[in-house]
Length: 288
Image (cartoon, rainbow, N blue to C red; front, side, top):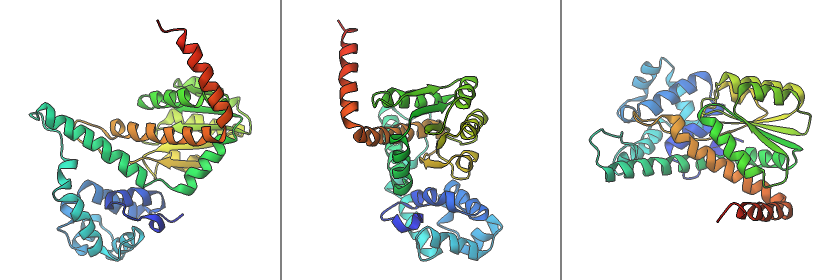
């Protein structure tokens, strides 16, 4: 599915992230430069940007067309509307002297922007296929390391209600051990913000060799994880001095997994409702 075919009212930043998996190496380089220097881009001519990125002007023009704009000038106009006020405050860095109210506004606004951007870059066809695979899985395993481990655990906490056998593993040794024992029909979901975690890549590779279907969740289209898995879902994130991309992306990953859980549970509605009732009854015994 061509990202530009369903751009609608997406922001310039979201369009770049949505197109990322389909960009050439040189286009990816230009896109990364734009994301890192948006304030600078709106004042540069296409020739100046080409010199900075060491590329041809035609490559920049082609990138703008791929993003759904008529040309570089149209892209700059759209980008400027996001960089200047009033949206400028959304992307402001946190300052050490910010008072509590300002700090709260920046954090909550940044999180809302991350969720909005992630929603915009969702590919419906890819998402539908992931839901189909998970709904028909004989077993689901979630793998995550470090900060992604808690995301994998949360996914297990949700999906266990559906009735499909599922587990989560944070330990790299458990991941490869479990992956090696999988059979066709099983689905593995590897979660890595960078998409470059060696342990996740190794576990996913072992799972594929065992015959399992593999799904990746990451923020980078050019990552090794995207190239390795059968299907990849992407989330958007913004990095600041005091908040890393990974910290921001976890909210989008949780929301994406919420979406997958609800969609899959609707396909197993009767069993899910029954299981939720059983869980509620069991948990009630632990309350005073």
